[in-house]
Length: 250
View 1: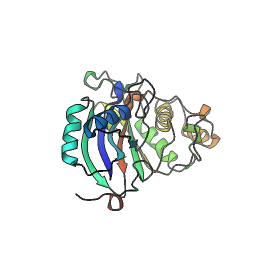
View 2: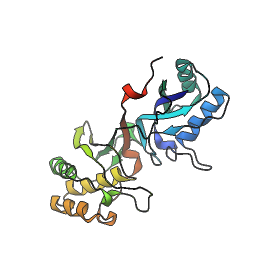
View 3: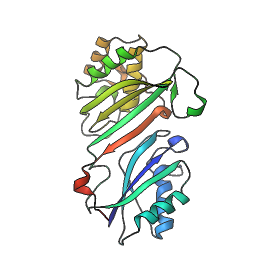
């Protein structure tokens, strides 16, 4: 049987999602809990690889086991055993070939910034020390949606076959004391959201023109784009699947 796990986590105390030798990661923490509860080694596959300090309010992983399990009971026990910065929403059965990463059809990320000191949001946003023109940044976000090749915003020397991404949403909103950048695509490149955010902030602070933004995208050169923003402001907020093809009702 194959099962999906729907979860969320605060990434502050973890060196990203993916297991790394001698480092705390979300994947390792969850695998250890599953292995303890199911009394056999359990390996899981996540829907993505969030970096050190990045958060996820919507995340999926899958695992396989040669027995039926009580999903509600496993969900309860996982939440009792795991650290409080990881929450399990649901465990549910899926078809035997369902894949948490490759079956995802779209992902949405949000980046949070503020020019104010927010004591109750520490570790969950990036503080900036300049004023922003939100309209200019939204014009820049609309320009990005005209393109498909995001080489200029991809981390160098990664093993990917293509830098083509199909953006379907990109905009800035003022939410309370924060400015939040939302971006949705069928796929993302390593470090792409944080470098796109940094470049749009350069537009908003008057450091980069809209024409300059176009030139950066068209140069297809990571060195031309803005700084990559710190991890703590970034959230994976939505992962979409064709559930009618994957999920099995209990």
